[in-house]
Amino acid sequence: MPRIKTVHSKVTKAPRRPFEKERLDQELKLIGEFGLKNKREVWRVKYTLAKVRKAARELLTLEEKDPKRLFEGNALLRRLVRIGVLPEDRMKLDYILGLRVEDFLERRLQTQVFNVRRQVVDVPSFIVRLDSQKHIDFSLKSPFGGGRPGRVKRRNMKKAEGGEASGDDE
Image (cartoon, rainbow, N blue to C red; front, side, top):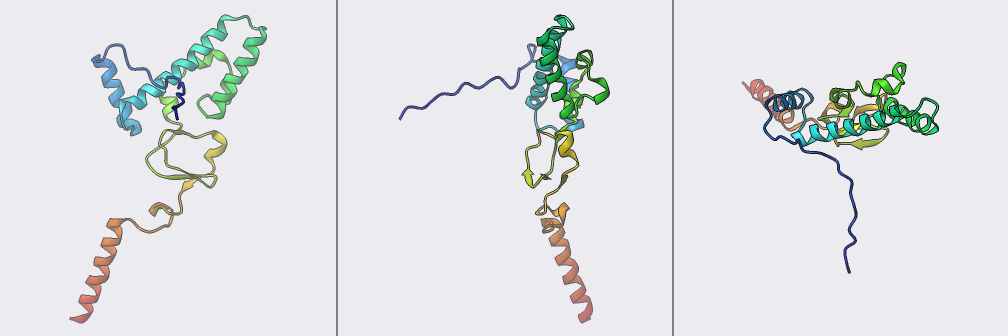
């Protein structure tokens, strides 16, 4: 049976100059600050930001009353407000051009398993929407959520119980 090939869109874009000191230092700072796994995650967010800014630039070239600008501009603004990247008081296309990579990285669900509306999410790059933010909690199976304690804590508890028992015998 033949394989059906699917066409996937690009997710990242590698930098043109691989060894540019300022860019490397900036990426390393972002990785350390937000706990990213590798530079590809930084590139993915930069590419997403570039696509959003490109769409905003194209819409800004159109006239104010153009139906395409009104329809697509409002959709773009609503999407950015819904994920929490753009505040509601800045719902203009001009403000999209001022967005930074850090604005997108702050909306990631990172480092631990969280529970969002009964759906366990363990993908660190999951973008949390504003309406889902109030439902974030630790998973019930997680040691932080009242589940079984971790390996080190269990070992320490066992030592403490063993130490008390030997202290009572003497």
